[in-house]
Length: 111
Image 1 (cartoon, one colour):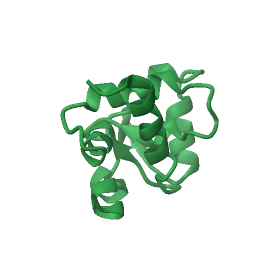
Image 2 (cartoon, helix red, strand yellow):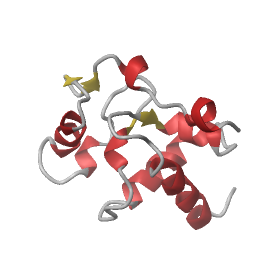
Image 3 (cartoon, helix red, strand yellow):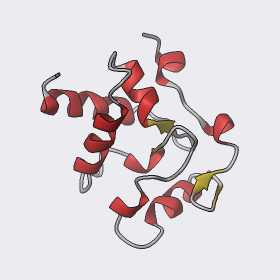
Image 4 (cartoon, rainbow, N blue to C red):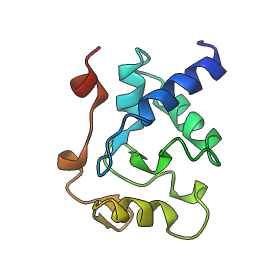
């Protein structure tokens, strides 16, 4: 298993690259980092980063666009509000037109 702290920092480095108005998934980040089966560990990293304003955790959703991490944000709908403030539409806790909003680091940054 990779060193957790180092892996988390690598996750945060990728999350900082997600463009404004775009989202990515836990699995896409894991795949980019060469740990394709570690989407859950990416989720743990996102959970551990709250309070770090330099990591736009609200831009990371699950593989179908569901705001699965929303309960880790302060307030009832903060994650949704942050996404909507960037022009991303959310309906029933899911990104509308997820495929169009998806930023895939493997495709965008290369491996």
